[in-house]
Amino acid sequence: MQLHVGCAQWTHTAWQDRQPHAKSRLRDYAGWCNAVEGNTTFYGTPTRQTVAGWAEQTAPDFRFVVKLPRTITHERRMSDADAEVRAFLEAVEPLGPRAHAIWVQLPASFAPTDLGALARFLGRLPANHRYAVEVRHPAFFDDERTARQLEYVLGRTGTEWIPFDTTTLFATRPGTEAERDAWTRKPRVALRTAALTDHPIVRYIGRDDPEVTAAGWTRWVDACVDWLGEGRSPTVFVHTPDNADALTLARRFHDDVGARLPDLSPLPEPTDSAPMTLF
Image (cartoon, rainbow, N blue to C red):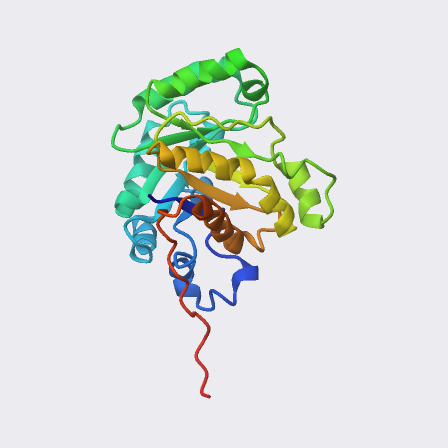
C-alpha cells in the first residue's frame, strides 16, 4: 500500500540546507518525497538529455506528473498541435515508468462550450500514457450538469480530473506577502473530491502557517484512506503560498495518512546532504 506525495517543485531557496549541491537537488528531493509536479515543462519542451538526467536521479517508482507546454494548452488551445504533442512525449520518454501522468492544465477561459475540443484532443492522444486534466472555469465546479459533462468526456479515455483545492487559502484574509500574491493568481473554485480513475491526483494549497495548512487537509487524509482501501493509488501535492515548508509538510501529510493505515509503505529516509567539513 503506497501513497505518493510531493511538491510543486524539487528545489527551493528555503531548502538549501537539504540541497547544498546544485547537480543533485532532484536526487536530494527524492530522498524526502516520492513524487513531484513537472511545472517547468509548461514553459517549453525539455531535451531528452535533460529528462534522462531526471530519471537518473530518481527511483523507478518515483512519480513525475509532467505538464504539457502552454503552446499546446493555452496558445493553440489543443488544436493543430499534434506535432508539438509528439515532440513532448518523445522528450519525456526517458522517464519510463516515472512519467506517472501527462498533465493537461487548461486556462480559466476554457469553458463548457470548449468540451468538444477537449474530447477531440484526448481522443488523439497515444494510449500508452496516463492523462489528467485540470480545469479552472467556475462553471465546472458550480453546475452539477456541467461537471457531469466533463466527467463523461474524461471517462471516455480514462482521464483523471485533478482538483486544485484552494479552499484553505481563501478561507481567511491573507496575512503574508506570499499569501496576498497567491490570492491574485490562484483559482477560487468550489471544492471537488471525487476520483474518476484508480490513480487520483490532488493539488492542495494551504497557508504559510504550517498548522493552518495541516488543519485544512483533513478531508484529503480521509479521501486517501478511502482510496487506498479501495485499491486506488493516489498522488497528493502539497503547496503553500511561499512553499518554504512544503517539503516537510508533504511528509507530514504522508504521516497523517500512515497513522490511519499501519500497512502504508514508508517514504524514503532523507540522507544527510550537508557539505563535508575538515573537522
